[in-house]
Length: 223
Image (tube, rainbow, N blue to C red; front, side, top):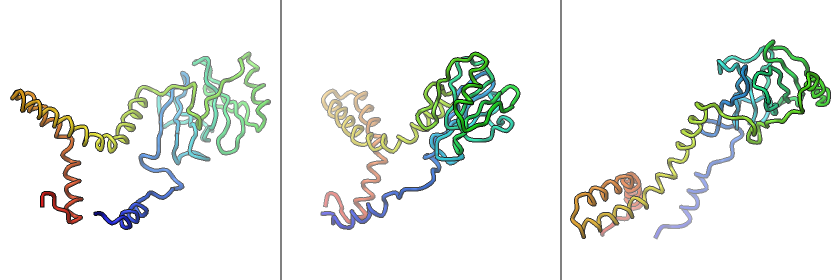
């Protein structure tokens, strides 16, 4: 029988401590389509924001590494463009909460103010309708990922789930192998034997780990 106290102590020692920064797989960066002039680099979460761990950063559509002149701040909220050809944006800075109206075509500020009403009035002066905002901390609703970014995020999610899938493959593969082997014993068809061996293959790494753990504990199966 395995002593309970050492197991609990080991779990407490190995339990991950809360960290104040994100790193590696804890960081998620995506590229979002915005308009004809700009794309959005979305950090959700990450350490590249002026404040917090969720923000937008605007970059030129034809270059992820090239930003807009003077627009080097992180953005918490930005209007969802109704017209992809419109160069104007209405956004709120992440760190200072100031509202900005910026012209992407001329790369100039039209407003940089703490007053939302003032920025909105300037935004609506060309006859624009009231804006709908995408929020970096709440899913960036209204904006879509680029195709490349979608597949990158899908690959990362798959990689993060691999340990769980490996653990799941151990019992499922073992059961499937036993079922196929039982069928082979009845039918004597080589196809059933081949499927039994193939179903057993994903369980081999898990079986090796289990054998190593049992051996180190001094338990010898079969004795």
